[in-house]
Amino acid sequence: MGRSLIRNPELAPLGRQKIEWVAAHMPVLNIIREEFVREQPLKGIRIALSIHLEAKTAYLALVLQAAGATVAATGSNPLSTRDEIAAALAAEGVQVYAWYNPTPEEYQEHLSETLKIKPHIVIDDGGDLVHLLHTDLKEIGGEVIGGCEETTTGVLRLYALEREGRLLFPMVAVNNARTKYLFDNRYGTGESVWAGIMRTTNLLVAGKTVVVFGYGWCGKGVSLRAKGLGAKVIVCEVDPVKAIEAVMDGFEVMHSLAAAERGDIFITTTGCRDVLRAEHFERMKDRALLANAGHFNVEISLPDLSRLAVSRRVVRENIEEFCMPDGRRLYLLAEGRLVNLAAGDGHPAEIMDLSFALQALSARYVLEEGAGLARRVYQVPAPVDNRVAELKLQSLGIAIDRLSPEQEAYLRSAGGEE
Image (cartoon, rainbow, N blue to C red; front, side, top):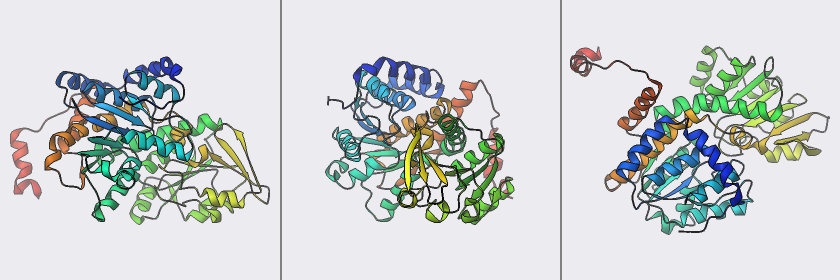
């Protein structure tokens, strides 16, 4: 077993306590863990995992280990790793290569060390592991059976590899499953983004104007929670259909340059680069807050912000002030990285219970079906998606109706299609 690279092994008891807390609130994953312990479906399998390394991710790693797998784990964002969690995982026998706020060189080293396990299965968040397996560590990539991707950003990178004919192994787009995007992206992001912003700033949301960039499932969640907190919400979009949807959901929609003059809090949720840039910063109010909820720190143009500023300083943990030539101050949260994880605890445990149950079951699917899968991006099989939903309902004590054989036959018939 490889030697872990962590910052402080003595933090393990604190990390174990946090993992136990979230595990007690992840009933779906607990049911799957019981099955995995009994059946050992991943026995002898090596899994490399790169997801935001905090308590809920740690529990997923332990569930995979309980299924018989050898697991190596690292973070997927420099500011989301929790050192106490890394220490607790290492103490449980997981190979861990991560610590909070690594240098860019250390971050790449941690990714590379994780892949030295020569994984059969890769579980990625954002696509950094898969990228390495298609570039610097391509010789290892050729041995991978397949893997799973957690995020919108990572799935887009996978589709690019597939279009170019360069994808080396099948990947399951966990992000596209209904029990992922309808809950994780919408309710998880919506709640955790505001938890991170409010905890970091200690400022009021009610009465302020919030500008949300992107009205996908994450943007929907952020906008809905902002409205619930009493904010006036403006949505900026490039997709005309989503823009109409935002209007009919009761939000104001306008061009981003017009919104830049009105917003008090700006939140990017697009997965694209340079969403907020110099022309926006030049129009913003004094003391506007800038936060990002996309995977990479490219949505708020840090080069533009740095170039425009005559001075910059940290004014509070995870808040940096950029002073403009005319005296206006713009406040960047969490270095423009994922505000809900870099400045908070991420999604609630009950939400990640669904997402990580999908990851665990999709990993088993990849292993069982790997030989018959082509080198392309697959959706989560409907039986897996539905099973996660059914287990969640079971954990809530909720029963739902079932179609009778006659009803199923009717829906399959020509009459059911009229």
